[in-house]
Image (tube, rainbow, N blue to C red; front, side):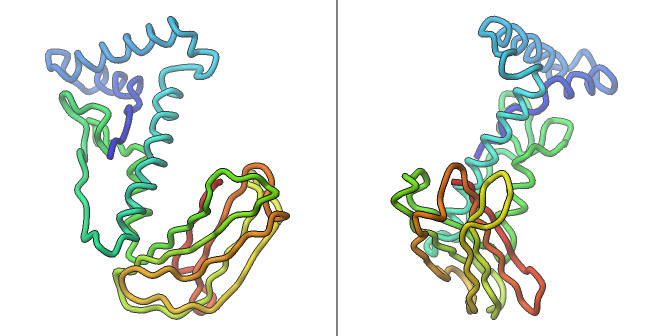
Length: 217
């Protein structure tokens, strides 16, 4: 995994307030901030990102999504018993790799790890991820359960990614065993797709949501 840039500007501000200017991390964070500003100016990145912080947070968004896909693939692989993270915190030459920055402030990947590592997890898959609206697509929901079996109702819907009424939805009773199982699969009708969509899956037990997940495609 890779947590991506911390908020370099915020890190430097924290160093100037609480840090020791004689330490290497203080110095190389200052250098990182200056180099990022120079590169952004040279390549006119200000037309996309107004400042260094916005660039850093956009990079965290990309890495959080990529890590979610990798970790999800491990959770729903019955042959995988676990995984290792490198690294949990930034420091020295691994600035950018950590889940937390050097000041132990969480990056966006931190929330992703908590989400994917829930004891009962639903993976939502749409294949292919990019599809002509006239063709339709295949939607599947796979469960990864580290606890006791669960009986419940699975709700799945497809709606515009920006919000709005569902274009397609299904409800079905399911039995979620321990470990990994493909719960259900559907062929999405062509009329349910158009533009950027979001698939939403919720597992309810006794009316309460016990697990949910989304996927944009």
